[in-house]
Image (cartoon, rainbow, N blue to C red; front, side):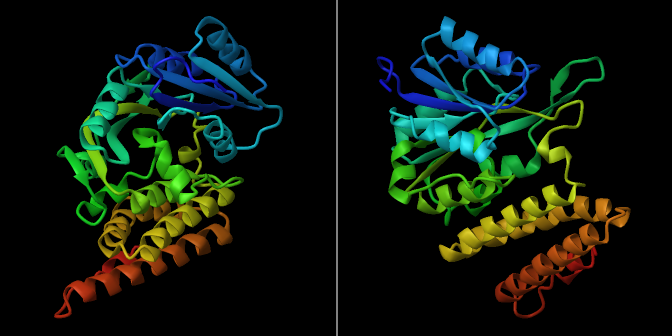
Length: 323
């Protein structure tokens, strides 16, 4: 596939049955203040109008290319298919039900150009139903700010371990070279496929930029069909827990103790309390067991980290008492 003249960035946009939202995602790319981009739209076996919308975008704007999977293969496979066709030096991602803010590419490209870093990471907000049939962007959450503010150029995971809390691939712009150098691919056949990849990118990056600017509005669908809204389903829970464990394992294997500690702390603060609330009233004993085992496992790990930091008495066993 030949790159368009002067294209510097490829944005990979996977989607399946997102006809209600895809036009807004496409329009948000076309509204970018940075013009030297192209996009690969990956239709992952859609049976609604998504296929036609992607085709129309490519027919009317040469910056768009379409890949179609005749049967659904999942987000990981869709993103990998896009990665295989990237010919620009920089690559980013946008889910087809989300919205990129107008200056997102401009700001991320500027950071990487200035610093020479491998990755630029931006902030994001949730796009929630407004009760009137539309969606409204919220505010930047504390864990997002901890990862992306204040602005930093040329930092590292060891210097800024809180960046490990930004576990989504679509708020980042990366050099394609890091994917090839580290042999990175998205896991296929599993949900939450970007959590492990995010940590792999951090540990392999020679330098990282962060910007506090919001680069993506992340949609929470009104019908509750987003993956992040289905954590009460046992199979979804299993993939969610595997992704969190896998991300910590990547940090451990790289010797990034501070980042692993920051990630565990955030999981205990943000993830496990919500899961415990679901489990308390869940009819499936297997679901309750899975949550209980995970909370005890992560709580015990937090205890070990706390004792290592403060042998005289630091103790986070109260985290495990959530279950």
